[in-house]
Amino acid sequence: MSLKIIELNDAGIKVGDRGGIVAHSPGFALVVGSELLLGERAEKQARLQPTKSYNKYWYELSMEPLNHGNHLRHTADIAFAHLLHLAEIGEIESDVLLAVPGSFSSQQLAILLGLAKQSPINPIGVVDSGLVAGIAAGICESSLFIDLQLHQIVVTKLNFSNGLLTSESVVQIPGVGSQNFINLMMQKATDSFIEQCRFNPQHNAEYEQLLYSQLPLWLSQYDDSQTNLMLELKTSDALHVAKMPKEGLIASLQSHYKKINQELEPLLSDQYSTLILNKGLASLPGYMASLPEFKSIKVLQGHEIIEACLDHVDRIVTPGEEIHLVRSLPVAGGSNSTGAHGQIELDGGEAPTHLVYRSRAVALGDIQIRNPDNEKDGSGTSSKTINISAGDLPTLLGETHVNSSGAFIESGELEFYLNSKPVKGLQKISLGDQIQFGIQGDVLTAIQVQNV
Image (cartoon, rainbow, N blue to C red; front, side, top):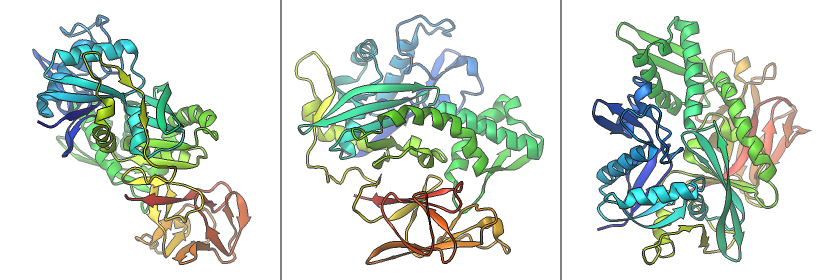
């Protein structure tokens, strides 16, 4: 029987083994009569019955009595039910390793282990998930792991010394979890429907739930070639269609981005110059472009923490009855470790492969950079085009090319900014370079994408 890993992030708890991700379950619970729905079933109805919905039971895990528990005594009761649910959908019948966030207090960890031992789950080891994220990313230097959960960001400080990577401490940033971002984006979408259709989906619980459920689909269509997101909501009597400007959407999220980045900026020194992000955070519209200066960034795609746990089982499993949290693991290889699958990496001395614009990576090659504000015929959007709003500047802003000597940008006589310095004509693009057309214009950042 294969060993299972449970990666505990309430934005989406994962169960996996050597075959991949077996189950995925967000941290939602809903009381329906005498039944307690969990995971995706509960999330799909959470807005319909908000007074019977729970999504902070992992974040606030404790034995403290609930004021309005709907026959539930405390958050530990809900967490226990969720563990039973995970055991069922993840086909867990024996040993597991638990990867838990460093934000868990010792009391919360003790509660978790106590609950697990009363379930079909038999925990044989516990490891800091931030530490394993660093291992998964191939980190051989001190770095930061930024983890997006339902109600907070958890920043794990990772220290590399003498071949060991250690989770030193965490910084918790409450109020900027995935639910906080979803609420902001739902309000922005609602504003678009009200303005364009005279329809308020949040005045009706059924339509609010529909709005919540449709939002990920709309965001998946996020494309640099379009200036608006197309929103469609079908109600019992009409199909409501609205456009949501992407610039407005990104602007609405900036206050949350600022709160996160204000915590990161003091840490981005020579000691912590590398960031590791989970996919949920990296996928938020405009977040990558909002980041302060850094040496490199690596984005985990979702399965790497489980794989890294399996690769280090012998060092995570605790012999005997007593289980302790593993906060240090050896790192194989030197500073040139290739790292995680699908990572985006910036590093000095190597050629860029992509330009990042509005959190999207566009492969460098024969690309036109155009100003849609001056498009006369509506053309200019293609797989070989990056559209940048540049006011009164010409329609064609510049072109990129790649040859054996590297990557280049040609702007002719049009002046642009390369790393905040005014230049024009043919310029070589180096890793980490930032390109702007207009001092207040959007930024294109040169990065290197490696798929290992």
